[in-house]
Image 1: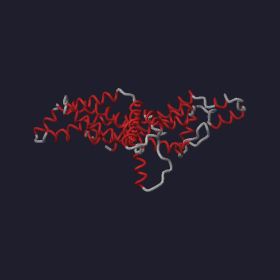
Image 2: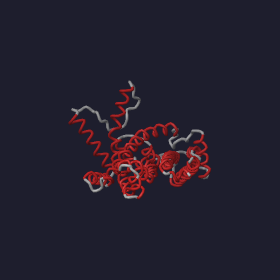
Image 3: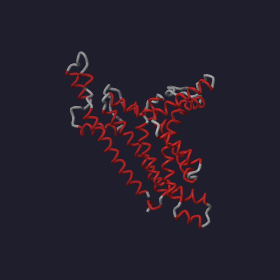
Image 4: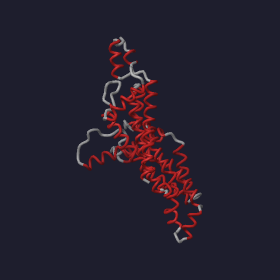
Length: 325
């Protein structure tokens, strides 16, 4: 099992570098970071433009620029933005925002989604199955920004109409530099995170419950489940000890790569609720034609997918004994 996990880790590191190099190369070819100086009125002196090009290593071939940037990354320096701001400090701040928002949302979404999918499969064509199916189809057919906007308006309505104007649900950003006791900080964090997390959880539950329902239906009529019951296990014990374990195997990979997609696709959630994380930063980097920002966000997403994929492999190996051989 350790050999299997180490081989997968080496593959993921290689893929991580390939993805980052591809993003760096495409951004370098497409972006013109000196346009801001060239189009200035009056235009900047040529010496200033040349100095900026040298500062951004634009006079080097792309592979050499990438190796220069990667060498800095290995030393903890992610370079500077086109506006000459250090990227490293902004990276940790943005990464913290995204991880606080998305880790909680996807964890709750996976747990509830799996449970809903299992119940829907066991109670196929019952009322609870129809309710879960209708919920999933409605959520999956509704754009994320519409769901987020509805939740935001609903939370504000609850504050105004049910809580007498007390702003319990805070739907814009986080409190910066918050002081006070642990209890006060915790309450403040919860007030800010409940509604945006709910927007993530709803989509995750709808998405994973459909896949879990299909995976569970595939094993409900299997021979090994009947054999387990024939050996004396109750149906419920056979389902959760053997059926659920088997049905979770294909879901492990889905969980891993769903997390990466959530980070990149969470731009609407971040912007609507004023959480300026990595997705928002990626759009900012593209707008400002900043190669270092795009490469840094790509590397962050690749590492998140790598870690999630590696954890999925651990889960996969734990669920399927054949992998451990």
